[in-house]
Image (cartoon, rainbow, N blue to C red; front, side):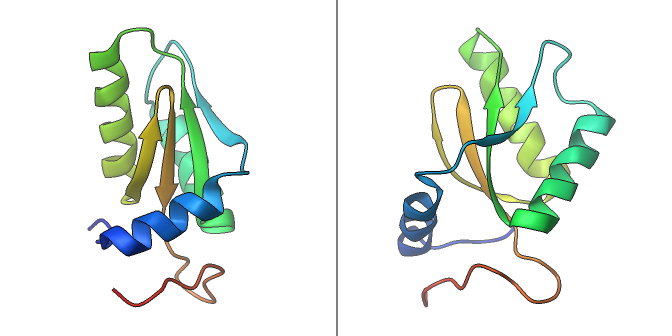
Length: 101
C-alpha cells in the first residue's frame, strides 16, 4: 500500500527535497531486486530521497519510476527529467512531520 499525499503535502516534501542529492542510481539493468532492496534501505533511513534514472527513453524512465514506487510502496512526490523524489515514512519515529492534509 503506497502512501497517499495531498497536494500541499507534496509541495512541502518537494521543498524539503530541493537540496538533496540522488541517493540511488538506476543503471542500464533497470529495476532489479537488489536495487529495490537498496531503495527500501535508503527510504527506511532517510524517508525522503531522490533517485536518478539513467534511461534515455522517456517511456522507459516512466516505467522504471513507476516500478520503483510500486516495489518500495513509496509515494512519488515529484519528478523532473531523470530524477524522481520518493517518500515513505518510517515505521517508528518518523523524521519528516507532514502538514495536515
